[in-house]
Image (cartoon, rainbow, N blue to C red):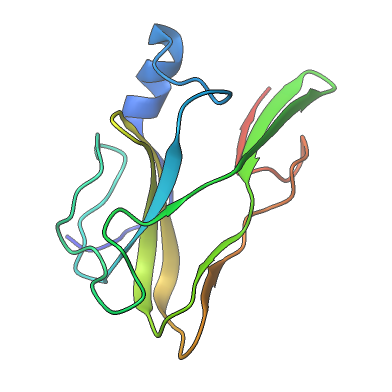
Length: 135
């Protein structure tokens, strides 16, 4: 089944309680996928199945820079914007820990097409806007 929405992966939720994710020392990546990908909350690890293929895109995607904090009792995590200098068509993405579990699935809502640079813009690092927020 193709993309059906944005999901925080169950492997991330359980991994938080098990201490499997360290946003100070672990390496996190974002991989891009075609509209054939079947990614959802049950996606546990990075997969190459239906990942974008092409010149300018390397399997596994880009390494992400983490931005985190806590304000007013809400902890938050987001990432710096990332881009590929390539013509790319992608329907969504998977954020994951290298050598570990999946964090979240991003559904772009439709195929997004670039002719020169493909950029993923993340929300600002704040307690009201960040990609992941825990209150």
